[in-house]
Length: 612
Image 1 (spheres, helix red, strand yellow):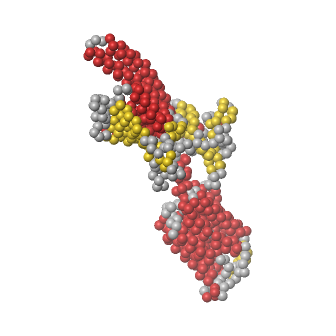
Image 2 (image 1 turned 45 degrees about the horizontal axis):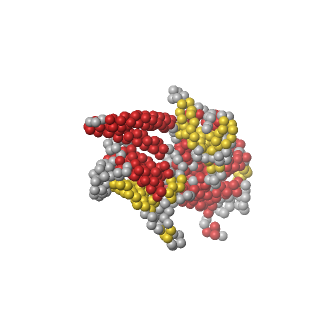
Image 3 (image 1 turned 90 degrees about the horizontal axis):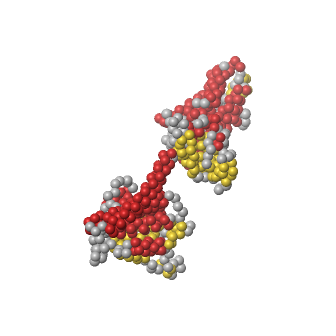
């Protein structure tokens, strides 16, 4: 036989397994303090005790010493499984279980087994009828297993299987991140585990020979791979599990996890404070028992049901409604935005829902204050400016003194500007609100805006150039250029109107395009094709407004482009903001540039959005 070439090969294999355990322990000791490392050192200590005791015992013929070495072998068996489970728990981020009473009971079982090993001659709990039974030239022994020996093997098998399950669960849960490490360590426990069970059940042609210590050789090779090639302790699942816990528990926003029947499964600390109940008390109770929500989680999309408090909307996911809650402790009532979304497992099966409460109290208060201020100011501006403008017109008509008439005319014009400012504030309020998109013919909209501008200011020159050239069709021929896009019509009109209006209103009468220096504006509309290079850039309409006025101060353009709130010295300030906010509402880009020899060029790039 090939095995005959290696004298006492069972002893050599056992000693090799023990030496491997010591070598790996030395290799990972520099990682002490990292999750699972100390427990893995305990695993290697137990395995080394197991393998070395058995290997040396196979070379010993003295019955007394052989009995002592067999007891030491069992000591390694007892503690290998316990230490391996401790490693798996801590390595996979379950160190809280290691400190639990359940794990303390497991350690207690190990201590009791150790005591029974030391006193086995008194009660025979591990074995009786101990005798030398040589095989393959080594001192193997035979004995009758006691009840506690079978119990130890059964418990150790369960512990190792539990540890393997935890490692496999990590492999499945975190994908490729820890796949090699977890797989290697999980597989490494199988060869010695099966060998131990086979020996205990006296399976095989030589039942007195325990092959488990020899099976630690492939076990050590797999562990060495995990430590070296896979960098096992440089990154471990504890990080991911801790991130999962803190992602919920450390958030300031209250979060509630619900089962499919809408009963509470988990609360984070912020949710406990909001609901005024601890997680243990709330668990397995309906969320409605603690809070009257404006929406009901679950059900079919759009489904409405009648319940206590009237009609309630059933939300499938992503809803955002608000609910007011008495915060107590003198904090008054707080307003929370309620957002619900489905919880799914890795296969995509729905397993529950999450409800997130975002404190929007200050935001809602500011919104209400701004709405009130906006409406009051607009109302007062419109009414009072109208009164002032009317009196200004009367004064201008009745005064004979040219200087006084000029002052009255100035009053009339400034009052008109104030009234227009109030109307523009209304435009801003509409732009900042949500609105539906619709199909808009850009060329028609621009044409209407230009026509309105000509009607308002008959002395100004407003030119319009729409580049209506043909473009290549899908069949290679030419087709009429399409000017339709799907955007917010009110926002697009506000952009075009204010761009043209700013150029006319702030013209100083010293232009260069007209002989009399009067207001001149040219509006050009074209369409640019997107880059056909796979970048995904779509076609865009380009609106260009040129004027020969005094230009826009750089600091105002910088203010609007940066979004900073500052005092505006130029009268076009609010108009520039309307252009900026309107462009943001339709996804357009606005660029300001100086025009030679005088004036400003404003380019607005408008996205082309089809019906889909």
